[in-house]
Length: 212
Image (tube, rainbow, N blue to C red; front, top):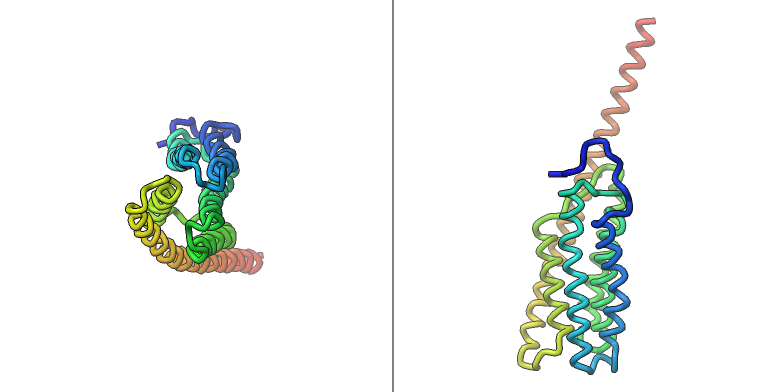
């Protein structure tokens, strides 16, 4: 429940949006640490993991803080998903550039995330599609998979990282299809509502003209 009094304007500069911007600012820092010595230095890989983990943590708390404290803003609604995709996309592309992750994996996840973003703006005038449990699970598993790839783990643990990444890809595709279905349903419902409202206005105007 929001702790902000009803009717009080929500400032754009608040702790929730601050965490979102921090996540964006951490992206180049993460990349710089990951690419030191072409990703071959264990200490810098651990540092990159810590930065990625911190950035991922802000993703988990900024939305919760915004909802609990009544700090939801239009800026936050736009900046939050951009920050999420910037972090995930930068990490996946970087791992592929380093030759540690197949480009097709990066391509599938990037295509899904870009498609969802386009769909979100396509249906935004009809409403907002809430995050599903599958979507939250996808985000969590993606973060775990990327973290395992970033860490300088022994070769024997690499199959575990591959398995988690495979699960992330499956969840990415499944939740992407689910998002498309929900977006189409929302758009159809919104268009029906608009048509009903237009018909209602025409009826009222017609009745008024008849009464005159």
